[in-house]
Structures are given as structure tokens and as C-alpha cells.
Image (tube, rainbow, N blue to C red; front, side, top):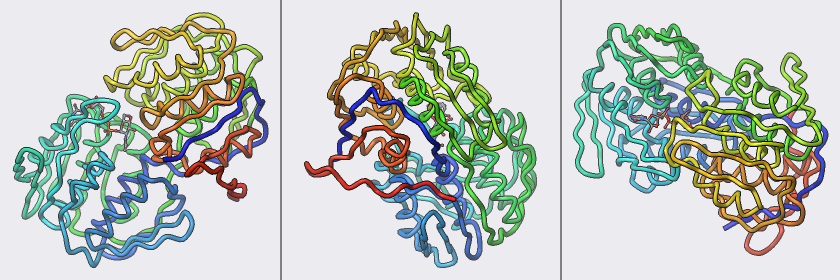
Length: 431
Ligand code: UD1
């Protein structure tokens, strides 16, 4: 398994471009099976989760081709409705295929995704919603079989604005009869991106990003080309790396409205933010200030996925910061690893109390999950000396060539693969 070797304390500079959002690419690729013909998805990040999704599409019988960040999916040849257990284990979010498969083939047979590193992550809302649309669900211990000869619009009230459940409903209801209304849907930018993709294919989805979504079912979807939105969580990770190293960097291809939930925290840390049309210059002070309280909430609240890298930056802030995690119950597993750098964080249930220290020292740590792993990279960039971050397959799920992007900003970071340093890839900046 690969490891990052990072020598911290180097200041960062220059500019970096965001790759496409993982959390948009996965549902959009899953939704492409509803389309009769070839969809071309641009700005698709080259991540292990995206590769797993492509493998699922191929196993279902779709023809998929990749050319750089362009992925073409032709689902005309689909001949299976089963996703095997190994795939479900590799990527929990393959639950997103439930709605698209049942809508396209009349059946979806998958394995129960179960819990994961950051929480128990039940799928009750997904199943209840699909039942409301007329699907029959048969749960058999570890597997779920969902069948429907056709899906019919319904009014669905979500008790919590689940991102995945909202996506499954939108995808399933896009090709159906009648009108579906989702009350209290998730409002994340990735929901809007999925609706944009489906609408380009001929779906009739209104109100994505708002508090009610209306979907008028259509009988067929048509091919389209779509460009995935930039990854806002990646942006907040670069911002955290800049903050902890007291640097100044420019992040290109951002959407300011997607990042506005994290701006107040960086302002409170003493960072100066200069917004362009699609770029952000962030200038960090020599010593960060504490942030009184960060509470993770569904969009437009502070994103749970950004909390760990931001918490890593706060370990060296002057004063005590508090992070309240309200979405996933196990999201603080990275904290004990972060404390190995000399950070002083205490966790009590949903709260992490971060007593800022002057300096972090080097440490050898293990990534516990995707965003927790990113937090360890941020800490290592700010720590004095050479650190190693192992188990970085977690990080590779959501960050494309993170070491290359950070090296281009001036960081001293290398990937160790089979005991050998891998050659840095050429600059991955895109036009
Ligand atoms: C998605 C994102 C993930 C992000 C999360 C919250 C993808 C691939 N992943 O995950 O990066 O952290 O949104 O922004 O887009 N819940 C239930 N029952 C359900 C569904 C969810 O109780 O049927 C709970 C979950 O356990 C969690 C909360 O609802 O506590 C939010 O989960 P949800 O919004 O569904 O997250 P995901 O779609 O899994």
C-alpha cells in the first residue's frame, strides 16, 4: 500500500486548478444508464471511486470509454441488474445505482452497503422513497432486491435532507409516470449538478438546490454532454493547506457560492480571501486565530467533508476552537492520529475541542478515512520535519494525484509505492 512522505514547514505558492467533484461524478455516471445512447461526461476526476463506478457500469453491460477526464457511457447494451458484493464493499455509494437500475431494467439487485469508517450510514430513506414510487423491496440479510414494472410519481417527505436519498429519488423519478415532489431534499451543489445533467437529457426536474424539488416523469431520456462541477471539498482542503503553512495561493475554477459555507471559518482564522469570478486567492497570516465554533450541517451549512482538513489547520491556531460534527457519528477517528503530530484535541461525542499549539512536529500516521486522511496531509505540511501518512488508498478515493498538485504549489511531498518513491507526474494543471 502507498504512503506519502511529507517534509513540512515549506510555504506554498502559485496556483492550482480544481478537478471535477467526486460527489457529482458518481451519481451522474450512475444516472447515465437511464439514457438511450451515448453520454459524454467532461471533467470527470480520475479517482479510485470513479474507476469503481466505471467498473460497475461495465459489469452491467454498458460500454464505457475514457479519454483523459472525458468519460463516455453507452448504456444501450446493458444486460444485467446485479451489483456484486465486492463492488458494494469497495464503494458504499454504489447504493446510488438502486434508483437508476430499477428504473432502467425493472430490477436492481445489490448488497447492503453496511456501515463504514465514518458511521453506520443506513439506507432506510432510499428504500422507503423507492417504495413510495411503487418499487417492491425485498431485503434478505445482506442483499436488497428492488423491482418495479414501472415507477409512479409520489410525494416524498425526507426526515433529513440526505444527499444520496435525494439523488436516488431524482434519478428514479426522472423516468416515471406522474409528478414526484420531494419535500426537504438535500440542497448540495452536487444535487443541482445531477438535476442539470438529467434535464439536459430531457428530464423535467424543477427546484434542485431549493427546499422542494418537483419532478415530472418522462418516458425516455436522450444523450447529452455534461461538464462536472469543480470539487468544493478539494478547494477547502487546499485552503486548509494554505492556512496551516501561512502561505498565499490561488485556486482556479471555483464556484464562489459552493464555497461560501466555509469562507467565514477562514475569515475568522485571519485568512484574507480575494474572490475573482472563478478564482480565489487566499492569503494566510503568520499565525492563525482560533474559530469559536464550526457546526457541520447540510448545505448551505458547513460541509461535514471539509471539517477534518479545516480542523487540522486549527491545531496551530492561537486559542481554542470547537468543531461540532452533526452528520456522521464516527467522523473524529482521525483525531488520535492528528494528536500524534503534537496537536491537542479532545473529543466528546459530537464535539472536538482543539487547543491550538504553536508548532506540530513530524509523525508517522495512518489515514483512517478519505477526509480524515486529507487532514493528516494538511497537518504534515504544517509540521516541522519529515512525516509519513500511510493507508493513502483512502485519500486516493477522492483526491486525484494530490501529491502532484501539492508539489506544484511548492510542497515537499512524495508518494512511496512498493518501497520506492514514484516519479512525480508532470504538472496536472489543465487549461
Ligand atoms: C454524501 C456524500 C458524502 C457527504 C454526505 C453529507 C457522496 C458520494 N457522498 O453521502 O461525501 O459527507 O453526503 O454531505 O455524495 N442517513 C440515514 N438514512 C438514509 C440515508 C442517510 O439515516 O437512508 C443518514 C446518514 O447516516 C448520515 C446522514 O443521514 O448521518 C447524511 O447522509 P447522506 O446525506 O445520505 O450522505 P451520503 O449521501 O451517504
